[in-house]
Image (tube, rainbow, N blue to C red; front, side):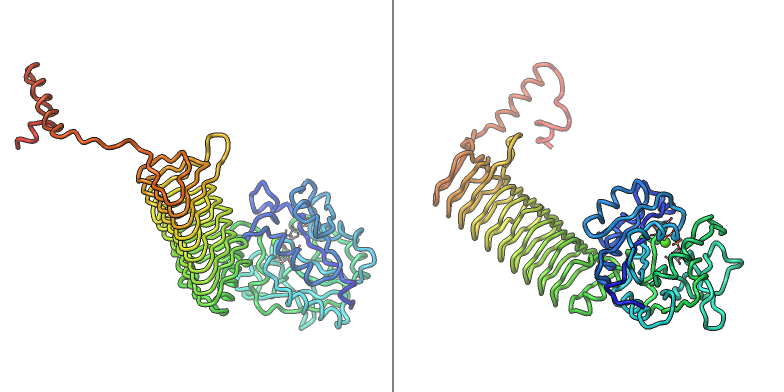
Length: 476
Ligand code: UD1
Ligand code: CA
């Protein structure tokens, strides 16, 4: 039919999306962490050379913004059907020999499938080639009607005279048209159907010769019309991604509860324990154990890391890092090789040096820790003075006593200690012990004196001491 360079892709994305019951255009709803339109646009770009055309609805500025850098945009003034959508793209398709139509709400198609369709269109003496499938549940999809083997028409489910065949061949909504017969047929489209729309599918009934290419993996054609289908497509994508990861050497203990977004990479022999969520630009190294119930977003780890049920976002872990349960590591943080977070720590925009440990109940904000530092339980970097954030620097081998408050800007030199419970407001020089707390006094015999005094007072006013305290308790 045409060389790939003369094929233009058109993504139909102007529908009202009524069945989503949403204030947002359907194609901006996400699966696998990306809006539907991104998936389809990426597909269009990898299978054709010229920039794709995306047809958007009037007022769908958010869709325009999303696609403008990667595609030409046509506006369908009124959503009067898929035929009307393709007609709206026509002015941008002058000179195209063939037109690949992709529905904007069918995100799982594989590039190879579409390449096969384009290849078939190049050799078939047909006006159009359409991709068909036999999904186990054909609800909502147009039915392909044949006479013997010959394609006759597509009938929308709503326009079917009866329930139809049990496992029918359905229309995926993906077609390659030869441009010359397409345009006049599109111009002739009527609206005589259940929805009163201009159906692109009716064009196929008008063309002289239509070839049908069956889809091997029916899951690729799953479309999103409502939020039930949005979840089903998300689940299918998840199964596909997890399967690929497992076949590439990742152990997924419970695929049902593991969420791996498609752009995420995981190294071999890493174990993903149940409830693990890996999102965005996350890259996990080899021989790691992640989870149960860990969430990593845009986070890169080295090899041999263990991350228990923690939440990490926008951070980097070098090799052999351990993150225990109930930790939150926020963007801009770095955990160097062999460093460790125990439990209940929050780390923001901070670097924990090689071999350093933050075992319990700590907040590190805007802090840089050297190597082999130990942070005592309950330590806080007071990095915000109510107006600005300030840094804390802790040198190699320093030991921060439990419950130290480091009032930033703060500096603790290499090998220095801070006394437990100190509020550190001045630099602690290398090798020094910084103590900043009230000195302890012991008042010997104070308790007995206090109790006697209080019993005396009660007698003097003629009342019994309260039952729950004082000498009455002690005498039992
Ligand atoms: C369509 C097909 C159906 C096929 C199914 C596959 C028609 C009439 N029916 O049905 O045979 O089985 O896709 O998924 O084509 N759109 C516009 N402008 C409009 C209407 C729709 O751009 O006026 C866009 C939508 O944004 C969507 C795509 O076209 O991305 C398909 O429209 P939709 O209404 O979802 O069609 P289906 O009912 O799914
Ligand atoms: Ca649809």
